[in-house]
Amino acid sequence: MPFVQSEKNKAYYSRYQVKFRRRREGKTDYRQRKRLCTQDKNKYQSPKYRLVVRFTNRKVICQIAYALVDGDRILCQAESTELARYGLSVGLKNYAAAYCTGLLVARRLLQKVGLDDVYEGNTEVDGNVVTTEYDKKTYYVDEVDDDKRPFRALLDVGCKATTTGCRVFGALKGAADGGLDVPHSEKRFPGYDRDGKEYDADMHRERIFGGHVGEYMEYLEEEDNQKYQEHFAAYLAADLEADGLEEKLEEVHEAIRGDPSPAEKKAFTPDKSFKRKAKLTYDERKAAVQAKKDAKNAELEEDEE
Image (cartoon, rainbow, N blue to C red; front, side, top):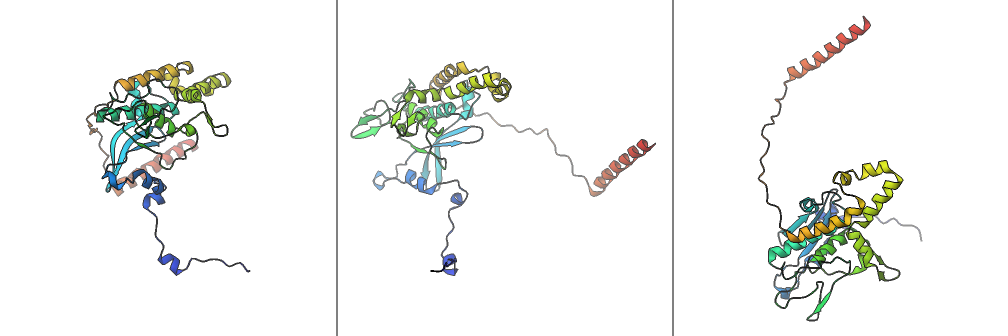
């Protein structure tokens, strides 16, 4: 049978429908979003809450959001740049910072809805997955209160690949340890061996406390001290060394649990002292160019003499 090239004809183009704008931009996975937002009809418009985790070039953003017809609403938010209030001003994108940001948004939300005293979360960070069976349902908290159920939120990773050890799951673990009921398993945490079906919780705990960063700091200091001084300049300026990372992060966790409330907003006063220069006229610009030419010609004549 000879090769026949299939051409898109008029019938194809007359029926063509463009995809949603955010799908064309590669920003929203609508297949995922539909499953995260669609609620059962017999629950009468009770929203499904999502733990939204996003990474920028400089920070981690964690939000608790729910969807309405005219767009999403943000119930609570935390950013890793806020960790400077709690003593951590460097390394705001790594796994440890993602864990701290997830912990912060969880404690802040529970404080807002009045559940912070009922669900304190996991105060001893060990890397294990905590589950509780109650009334034929599985909750991802230590204990379930008889009067008030835990606040459930589903992880929303956006378009990020959910590979094993991804920083997104650091934020999830922080939120779960903070007292949120986030369904998960250990299969995507650092330390899980897919072939052996085994999970090393100690390896995950080491990652939460920045053990991988400290190990690289020690290696680089021995192998290439100049690169170490450049690469970890911010750590050294903050007087933070490899052997002090775990202690520092423990202090940050305690500080977050002590006061997770957001900082007070500062009144913004724009700087009005700056004034834009008046635009030059055509004659003024022409005169400026001529002055430069005359100065250059005079300089050349002096060199010739």
